Amino acid sequence: MMDNYSVHKNHQVKAQEKDWQEQGLYLFFLPTYSPELNLIEGEWRQIKAQEISGRMFEDEDHLALALKEGLTNRSNKVGYHL
Image (cartoon, rainbow, N blue to C red; front, side):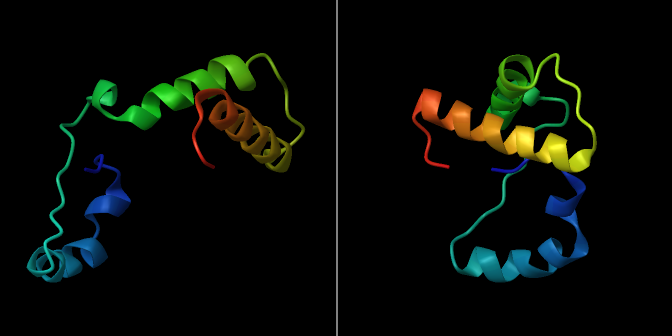
């Protein structure tokens, strides 16, 4: 099950789809504009609201480090293996 991110529908994926189906792998896409069906959207909402909200970052590297820390904290809280 995949969202409609352009990478998921690019020519390389489409070229492999028939081979994958022959192996029993089928791609199903979520309806467009349905974030409630994509479980990662809820996690991103929590990370933005709980882990990095109200913080300022000097550059992209500091933001990336804060996201990594937030993902680790969130995974520990909910019992995910990261």
